[in-house]
Image (cartoon, rainbow, N blue to C red):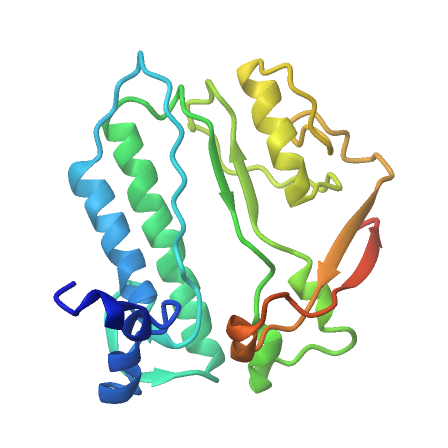
Length: 232
């Protein structure tokens, strides 16, 4: 903040923070510990108003390399990028952070009347970890992002229910719109009412990410796959 305006763009470096890379090359990126802080601030400062309609979007960057926290969200001394156990530990931390925020909503007595969606931007990244390289086609696991939906009015007294309905992240706008009575048209299906036995094609578009793409005007070409049946 104290740098001259002309230098700020260079220092920020598209969220890659020039000084951190120079002075602390092995340090965890800010977005990792920012995720822990977001959950802490939410727990400490969130307020609720049952009579006021609000929309909140929270983005947690865990699990994500480098793996610098364990399942209790405690910081580790060393960054490890290729350890399957630490990947799963950080995934446990992500669930812990999610639970912390959900518990806060219950404490504020706004959980029942809230619609909560927990979604990953893509499936797990275990194919990047040599000890867990799957047999067969590794792209399939990227097409399996986490998707959890807590409907409006549900008190959350029951255990999570697993559905084999052929849903996709593209279904979320229609699902939310139907839940709040919005008449606008959206593509996709309502995941809360979709018949699990329905035969439905879903499209998955895949590309491999490299840091050099930060400097490109466009993303690389994507491969498009049609998913039929159980993606597993």
